[in-house]
Image 1 (cartoon, rainbow, N blue to C red):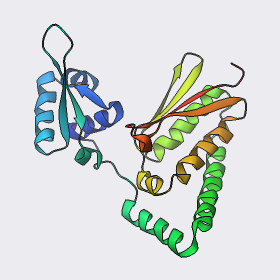
Image 2: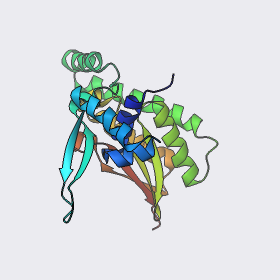
Image 3: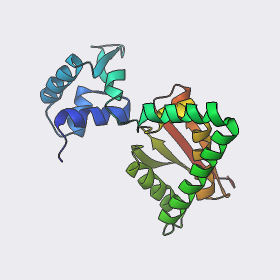
Length: 209
C-alpha cells in the first residue's frame, strides 16, 4: 500500500529528528510549498511542531519535529499488554523469573539472527545484515561507515514499553550484537532512547585499533 505524503513526512521526521520544509521537499520529491501545506495540516492535527533557530544574519530557520502524539503513530508492539505481563511475572514469580524470561528471549533472538547472518562474512556485510533484520522488525534501522568505525542507528523501538519496564531487554540486545559481530569488534551504545536520546545508536569498531 502506497504511503500518503503526510505519512512519508512523518516517517522522514522520525528518521531525522527534525528537518526544514526545504529539506523535506527535496527528500520526498515535492515542492517546498506542497511540503509546507502538508506540515500545516500535520501541525493542526498535533502531530508535528516547529522549532525556530537563529543562524546569525538573516531570517531564523524553521524546522519541524514530531510531537509526542506524532511519535505515537509509530507502533510500540502491544505496549500495554506487554507491560502488564512483565509486571505480573515480577509480582507473582519474582525478579529471577523475569531474568530467566529475558535470557530465553535473548538466546532465541541470537539463534534467529545468527541464521539470518550466515552469508555475511566481512564486518560491513554483518553490520548491513544486522541492520536489515532490525529494519524488518520495526526498528527503522540504518547503518553507515564513520571513519574506521561503523554506525548502527535505530530510529524507533517497537519494544520501548517493555524496555522501559525492564532494561534487561536493552542489555540483552547489546549482548547479542556483540556476540553476533564477534570478539574482534567493539560494540558500544552511544545513544540510548531510555536515557533521553531520540534514538538508539551503536558504534562498531575493531578492537585492534
